[in-house]
Length: 211
Image (cartoon, rainbow, N blue to C red; front, side):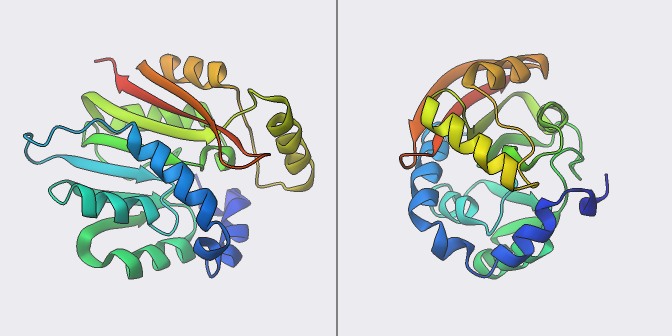
């Protein structure tokens, strides 16, 4: 899949300069929800985590401080975002330019995968979830935090955004995300809807690879 097929690449090339500053409050809330569902085992050795749609590396930086023993990887479709993430993370994470629907990783490579506020830009959420399942080890964890249409005000807000912005491909309800995760081979262990502001309705889901 060519990265230039996704219109979000061009938009986030422009956003990269000011993204962290503009979305600081939103990112603080969503990052806390995503990482709050991550269930790590401090006694385990040689664990690896990938952030799918890592943007400027905000979540990876937090993980690097909280879990310095975990090997960190991240990918994003926008080269400018990856450049900014490399500046922030240095050698603490291996970062690649890649689409969620075609991850540049080996099968069963990771213990954990996280994806925070990126799914609305995926050209295919089902394909991205199948790729996440592919690169996770048996019983590996995925924490997905995504825009949700569960509540009326966010649902209307996202419909308006979709009408105005071609980068927004699809926004689902919590139940629809769970269904797609199960179809991709995951077992759901936690579902936490939340708000990151009056119009921003989201859900964080912890799912484990079923085999």
